[in-house]
Image 1 (tube, rainbow, N blue to C red):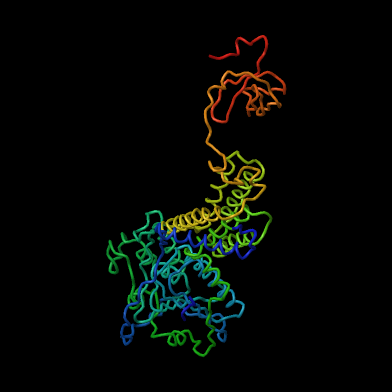
Image 2 (image 1 turned 30 degrees about the vertical axis):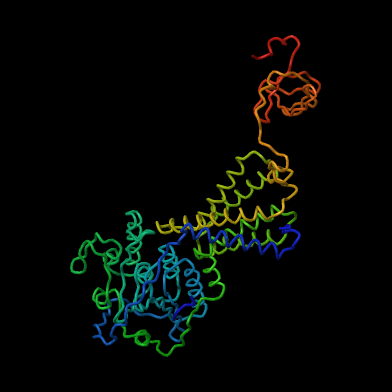
Length: 499
C-alpha cells in the first residue's frame, strides 16, 4: 500500500502586518536559495523495470523461523514501510503496533519497500517491533536495503518475493561516503544483536554493514552483502513466497480480515512540519514575528504568529524524537537572557550575545536525533544556515518598514528618528581644546553627569570617584563625546594640572 506521501504598519491593522511579514519572508527565502541553501537528504531511487515474476520457487526452509500467530481468528494488520525511512515514520509504526495489540490481531505484517534512511528511526521502529505482544513479520516487497534490512531482521520472520533483495546496510555520511568506523561499529553491533535474538547467523547480518568482513561461501571481503530471495532462503534468513496470498497461506490465516494501516492527518502534519525544507520557514516566521512584536507596541497578531511558529517547530521535532529536553532548555534560557538584555539591563551586551548563542544551539540540537550521523549534522547545519539567511534579509526589510516601539526607543535599542546630517546630526569630533579646562559639576557625578565649563554645559564622567554637585572639576581627557573629569582639590591645584 502506498503511503500518502508602514505610513506605518501599526496604522494599517493586522492584515498589513501579515502582508509585510510575508513579503519579508519571501525576500529571505529567495536570498537563502541564492546562497545555495540546498538540503541534503536521501532520495528514493527510481525503481528498476519490472522483473519477470515467473521464477522457479526455491525450496522452503522449515528452519528459517517458526510460524506463529497471536490469535488464529484475529485481524491481520498490514503496515507499509515505503520510501525513505525518516523519523516521522516511527510514531506511525508505534501507533499501528499499539492498535494491533488492542485489537488482538493475529499478526502484524510490515510491507517493506525501502532504499533505507535514518538509522535512529529504524532503531526506534525495531524497538517497537521487539516490544510487540503480537508477532511481527516482514514482507520484503521488493526491497529492504540499509535501514530497511535492520527493521526486517528485528521482526519474528522475513518473507521474500522472487525478485526481493535485502542488505547493504552500511551507514553513510551526508556526501554518500562510508561513515566513520565508530558509526560502522555501532551499526554492526546492532545488526549482530538483532540477528542473535532471532536465531539468525550474526555473521551474515554484520556482512551487510561492514565491507571488510568476509563470510566463506557467501561474500568476500571488500563487498557489502545484499541477499536475493533464494540466497536468503538458503541461509535460513527468510521464507520464499510468491506473493501476499501465499504468505498468508503459509501463516494459515488466508481468510482473516486485513486492516490496512494508513498515516493519519496528524502524522502527516508532523512529518510535513519537521521536513528540512519547511523547518527554516517556521524558524524564520517565529523570529520575525517576535521582531515585529518588539518593534510595535502591545501584544498582537505578529507576536502570536511568532510563538505559534516556534511552537510548531519544536512540537513537531519533539514528537518525532529529534528535539530533546536539552535543546528546549537551552533555547528557553537564550530567550530569557535576550529579553533581560532588551528590557531590564540594556546596553550590557554580553547577555544578548549569550542569549543568541543559547537559542542557536538549542535549535541546532533540536535538528539532530539521538544518534546523529554525518548526514544529520550536514542537514541540521544547512537548515540553520538557511534560517539565519532568511531571518537576516527579512529583518533588514522589516526594520525599515516597521514603526518604532516607544519603550525600546527610550532604552536606546531602536532610534525614533533618522540621525543624518539633514536632521542636524554629525559624527563625534575630538575636542582637544577641552583638556585641562576647569569648571564645576552641575549635577552629582555617579560617575556620569553634567559639568559647566564657562558658559558651556558638557556631559562628563568622573575618573575614579563620585563627585557632588557644585564641586570644582577639571577635564583630564576628551575623546568624542566622552569627557573624563577629576575633582580639583585646593591643596592639590598645582598637582592636578596635566601638560
